[in-house]
Length: 356
Image 1 (tube, helix red, strand yellow):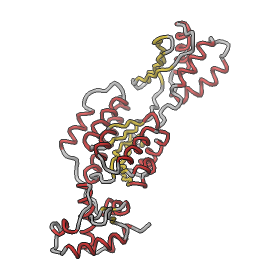
Image 2: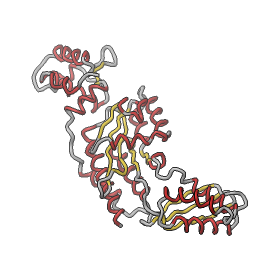
Image 3: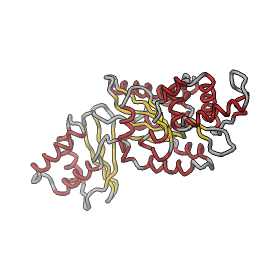
């Protein structure tokens, strides 16, 4: 792969300006940029023929491409990468965008997931892309466990954590559930869980059930096992990822050939088994990172770009990530500071909740 910083350094001023204006024009409109258009915007007066020659050179270097014989040029993935790394002018977050993000966190939320869902919805609305928010893993110890019967084949297991947040899951209880079995299962688990995290509890439970098998009614034992099975992978990335604004991706594609790619992206977003990579991408470095097209392993087939930033707790430990995904012609200069601001906002909120 060509060395893009070296390529950029070796370009003369005219080539650099033609390249920059083609990329900016494409990011702005989504259409190929022609030489005649550039004659009206170049800082020096040059002919369309001269600009076409420069474009051909840039195409030879793998930075530009032309989708149709008669059309203008568009940047390649390598060209976009070079633009983002060397020529992108990052703006500041507009006051109106900042106010919307702040407002999404201004009212009290019952739990972290609700809060992050609000942030994600606001982020997708502002950027017109799909937002991704990876919630932090719950490390708080458990205070109390409760089972609630909702009918013969539905029950709820409720976990109350020491930091005050509450989680509940629906599950299918064993047949013939009785109120006494519900109480026995809840008492057994609450006694065992006191002061333990969910991960600790799973280990302790396996040992304790084996040891106290004869003490625990078989129905209660089955209930305990099923009730905790719905937390089989607590805090796993697959259940921690909040995705909002998928419809924005359809709007962006319209009737274009990208529509099939967007459909592929939807499939990727729904298939969450690879979501661990999302956090890996963010954890690879502090600050905002941009992944273009196939660089973006998580959604590589969809030809999309991902702008992602980790967020940290009060101890400066990375606990989650926020990002925006959209077509490769994202307005990077605007979206980078928005993602950065959102990550800092979420980090402050998580730190504040941790102290509460």
